[in-house]
Length: 257
Image 1 (cartoon, rainbow, N blue to C red):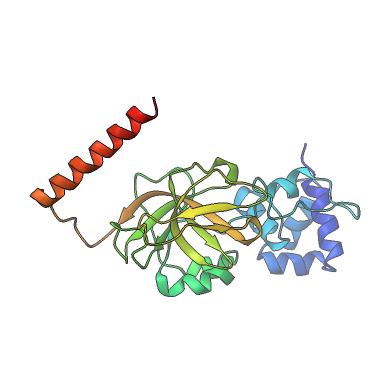
Image 2: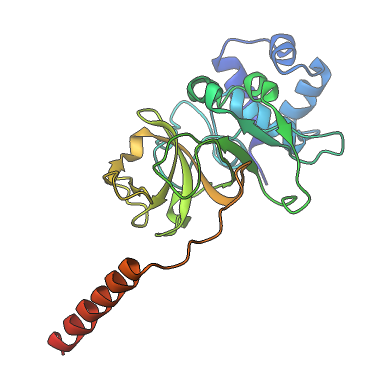
């Protein structure tokens, strides 16, 4: 049995709102607010998400915790208890893929939790991504070559950061660095955060602290207008270099036996 009814009543009164004021803020009928608070009905999923966002809670907290004067929320940096995500849906109630262009990256840091901001982002859908929550991010720079600057990364939302797997690539949204596309070196560490690595080795790895991380999206696909060039034929110089590297590897293996 959920605690939605009692929690809604407590939260509304604590915020100093009447049922009508709360209904106006959520764009619903006042009678619906009364029904929810008296446990005669429960808000549907999308409305529950919107209410949780309004109170800066997770849906799990809103439905299952007993929220009263003694209740304290879990820290938002806890990897398994992240904020509610704002999404948009199409006419068939299927989630869209919102696109965050490079020019919108700075605004995304302030608007990622604002349903109105998210609703204004360009959006599209792909038939292979119809289960889960996805967002697309345009990347810039050469830190992840051979993926060219201007490519669009389609990422799947990671709710629990402990699910992040080393050596795989992710879009990490943080307060300090904004939107970056990187490879993760280690599993998420509560006391340190994430170590991010560029595929272009001219860039040094660095850590993003847990408190600084806002969102993490697992890279699932990319879109680029630059088609790959065919691999060049190996030259005598490259073959010689490959042979030298192989000899070094073999010598190292022999010496370690």
